[in-house]
Image: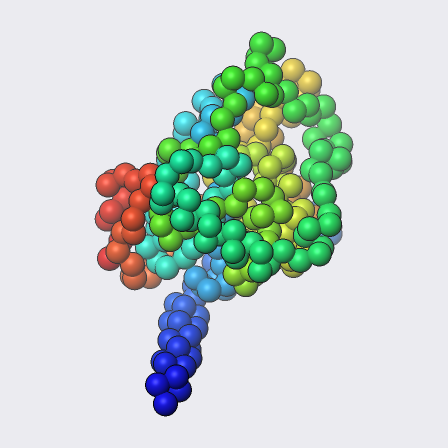
Length: 292
């Protein structure tokens, strides 16, 4: 009898979760390009059950030029993630290297179990590479630093978590692109909202893996940054801002849709917060105002 009662309450809690998280759906306006290159606006229905917020941001990029740009992007990304958490959404980080911290290890272990559940043969056995696509839309691009004295595996490179981007006890952490795709699949998410660096390298590679899980990918176009190599691209793409536009357009033509951060934040903020601040690994009291 006791087992039956416990089972009843377990089922009831699942039904309640489904009801609450689906009922709090919001509709966001996203942009894509059709096969004729025309802009098309679509409505995308998201809620905390079907959508995860994903960020890829290193503690330090190997090229100081990208660290200078990250200085302006990461705090804004962090604020958007706080808004998402406070409205019940899950945040997933790609941290290639971890930290010796009990909270972080708990998050990583929780994520590893979800990864095991979602690791399909398609994800496990494929190794897509974004570099082979660069000739299609960004001729002249080289994955090099504009300062010749800095190399890809130099001392400045640090793939641990970026302290400008908060990590909470309720977040998830992936250790690779495969891990990221398997975690998203294992949790049953259908939409992924992308933030971070770089849209023609790491974020494109992540997108290629997510195809195997049939996931809709949404780039927040003003909070994703492309990699750019001025010496060999300046004639075709004269500035880094133009590079971002080219990459976002290519992405929305081929792989998903884009959205502006303001449009996303506006719809999220129409909802009342439903969570209090969780336990933090990295935290800034500035954003406490978004929580219940």
